[in-house]
Amino acid sequence: MHTPLCLALLSAALSLSFCSLSLVQGGRIWVGRRLGDTGVVFDGFESEFVTTSGASIFTRHGGDGPAVLLLHGHPRTSATWHRVAPLLVDRGFAVICPDLRGYGRSRGPAPTTDHSAHSKRAVATDMLEVMHALGHQRFAVAGHDRGSYVALRLSLDHPQAVSAVALLDSIPISEHLARMNTDFATAYWHWFFFAQPEIPERVINADPDSWYRGDPAAMGEENYAEWREALRNPEVVRAMLEDYRAGLTIDRRHEEADREAGVKLTCPTLVLWSTGDNLEDLHGDPLAIWTNWTHQVTGHSIDSGHHMAEDNPIALADALATFLTNNNPQ
Image 1 (cartoon, rainbow, N blue to C red):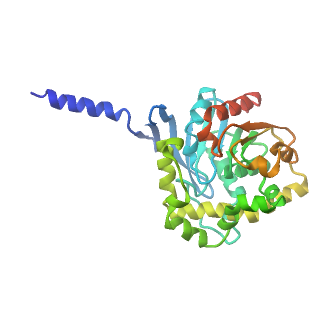
Image 2 (image 1 turned 60 degrees about the vertical axis):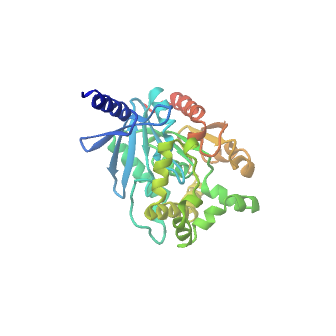
Image 3 (image 1 turned 120 degrees about the vertical axis):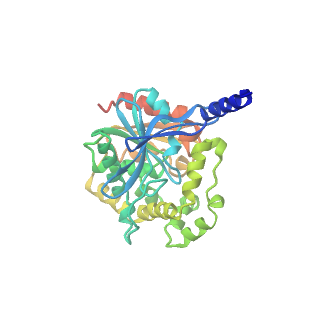
């Protein structure tokens, strides 16, 4: 008599094993979520908000071993690393993936007129405090796109903390601007549009889906859903734009001051760039540019579109793991 009910309950229980699961424990959230046939997204990773001196930073972390901090770019969140982070854990690393200040679920102060509240120096301080809060005094860092500028500033300002740095799809902001020409202005027009006061907010918030186009199949369903939700928050959009406004003003001045003072990266540096991106077409060999900023640089291209952590995670994870193993942070 109760067989149909039992079968229904069993079916529901089996279905739940493939749904989002979270367990709040000690003020933290343990997360394991299925993504199609690719396994569990951030399986075994812990998620929490870390309060820094200037922000509340949403952070995912998991694994044991030498620590590596992964910093996403625009307009992504820490979920962009969902295919790379588990591979690095499997290679023996502790992996930390935060949302940058104002992006995703992280929140910081209101914008300031000089954009210093969203400068790479301020965000780098967040990242240093997150790592210290998680018990990592010395660590490696890899940053993609806008996250690479945070990784650069963190490595320049706090060389005692950073054992190695990987800079992905990037040259310094000041180097981009020093090479300003029609091709660059055409390709990077959004830098200058985002720098305008108020107008970009109105345009983007009117229809985020039309402005930021994502592919759930390419990004992964959960990564896409998290990204899409963040873009519907005007506070997030404002913070992301402040990132660019800071880049053309205070961040550029910080970089130029470092160059004038002869400050360079002292740790081993890896530079990776996407074959499907336009960095090499615009500026030539990125390694040649980075030699002016570091004492120890190696690198190569990755067969990928711009979002290499999503497009070619195996090649990226292998390049990072090899570099980090050769430059063990411990």
